[in-house]
Amino acid sequence: MNWLLIASVYFIVGAFQAYYLPLGIESLSFFAILAALAVYFNIIANSNYPKPASVITWVFFFVFMYIAPVIQMADGRFPNTFTPGKTEILTTNVLILMFVIVIMFFEAKKRKPSSEPYIKKVHSVSVDYNNSGMITWLFILSCLSVLYLLSPQARAAYLQAENGKAMGLILKHFVAMIPVSLLAYLLSLEKSTRSKLHNIYFIVSLVLVLIAKNPFNEKRNALGPIYLGIVFGCILTGWVVSNSRFLLLNTVIMFVAFPFMKAFTHNQDGDYFTQASTFDFIRELKGLDFDAWSNIAATVHYVANNGHLFGQQLAATLFFWVPRNIWPSKPDYTGKLIAGYLTENYSMWFENLSNPIISEAYIDFGVIGIIIYAVFISLVVSKLNKLFNTSSYSSFISVFFSYYLIFIFRGALMSAVAYSVGSFLAIVVVPQIIKKIFEATSFRTNNIRINGDKT
Image (cartoon, rainbow, N blue to C red; front, side, top):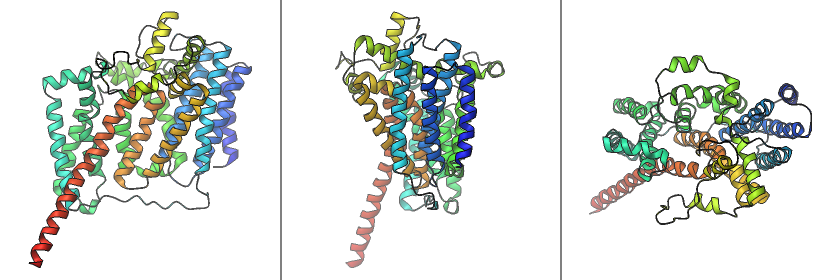
């Protein structure tokens, strides 16, 4: 990517900031974030290798940590009702800048030479005995999953997932995800080896996914990874290969599609046309969907008054699966903690707040936590990037969890981790277990045949 183009884009976006914010030290701190993102953009765009996780990381920080807070600051009001002072603004932007620089450092360190051509190694999954048996059993399991989800008991429990009920979470983030793994696996098959039975499986699996993950009533943090993962991980993989094109596309998705989808996913009356026709782009950027920056600022203020928690929130995240009747003093997720603080001291009116991973790091471990968490995220991003070029089904997994990073980044971390475990089990572990069973069965059958021939 030509540096002249980068400079031109930087100038245009900088002019946007100058229009919204008067020149001052607070404005300069936002320019510093923009400068870091410009360098990060160049590193990603100049890579000859597809980096879906890096692209999504950049898009999140550009939209949530730069564009949205600049517009909110110009408006003088923030989604979480907390109005930060100069100290909170500068501290927040320094923490964001540190996080981006660490990720950028690891990205630059792992970058392949630009002269080295990218050779697409992604291969489709061939249909052998083991894969054919795995697909059949995954198909049966998917059908049983959706049939159970349609039962009155399951539907009642499913609705309790938002309240953190264990059974609801299992149904929503594990059971309902099994048909997704089937659909993605079928799309990963080599076209020449697909049979008529596989085509029937595909049609049924598509219907099962639409039932289990209905686009009209499912939350966007679930819909995005599923449907975008299928589109770009299984169908339009060529769009991912070009990092600059994929980055620009996802910037548009984040700016427009993400808030626009609320007209469908948050519509209780069913009047989708009215909701869509009254869509206001700038108003959405000032809303709770884009509260990430302001929640970091609120966390900085909380720490200034209450001190760090020294791993308390991380422990609660790692042991999210421990019931409260066993661990009565189990901490609330960080979003709820900060929401309570804002309700008590400001004008916040509900407790279901997001809380970015930067806040999670800072509230527990301070500046050291920012560095440690950023290093960990860098390793995850690198792993997901490499996974894209492994196989067709791995490409889906890579893109799915790349989009899921938005939920990790935006928080709260406890919810994001709890939800991701169910998805990981459904789309990674379950297919592998079934496949291993068939591989073991096939191995034993072949041994019996060989021994029988010898006798």
